[in-house]
Length: 288
Image 1: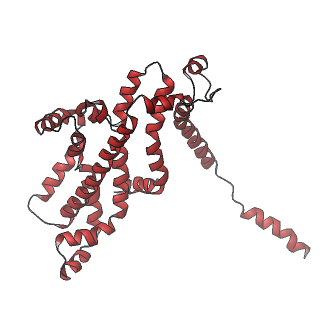
Image 2 (image 1 turned 90 degrees about the horizontal axis):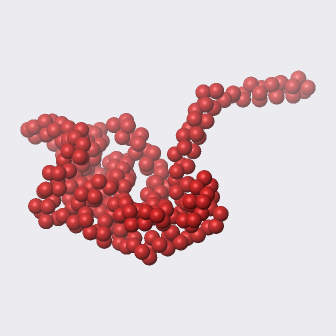
Image 3 (image 1 turned 90 degrees about the vertical axis):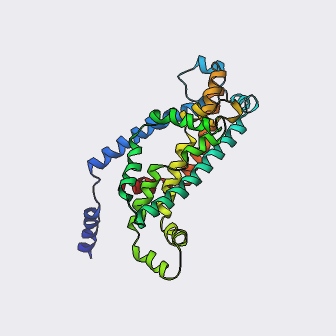
């Protein structure tokens, strides 16, 4: 019995694995990078609860000495903040819905249909991803102006309803779906759109989740396009409105930080709620 009891601790010690030094270094590096990335956001949030006098007297202190919500009251009462939120919400949800529909439908067509010039057309669309928006923004502005959509929310929606990235991603996913499923649905009497709706879309859920999150974040944070297409204050989206508000309250840093914190809140909620889908989307797009 004594020999068995002496061997038991030895076996338990042998089973314990030593943590590799590389893993410890990786954790330290990741923690340091996370702190560097998060610190500006914490500073912004804490500054939003400070008064203007305290900000200039104690610029190095992160936590406020006297907490105040005067900056938030100023944002809500002295600006059409909720109108800006509604504008951003309408544009973001509408564009995301259109992009998901057009990308999945076009990806299905390019992956499962055969027609003349398909590959040339697909590569031509794919090549547009290499062209910076700064090159096409003047032609897009002229087209929007000719359509009498300038200074409306449609000016931010119409140019974004189809994206080359979304088409490419959905096409790659559709290409992996077996043709036998489409052929079986066709034998059962389903038409092309019924196959798209009942067979293709359910199998594209991971792709739809990833594309939806990326599109939402991109449109919500867009600044350059609203700057070109919108001039009226009550039709601005939040990123453009933040610049307008900052210029109007350039000496009231607390109010500016309060506006920035409020603008960041919806994106933070979306990332927290759809955290798993966001991480999965990154891995999916990387593999594709």
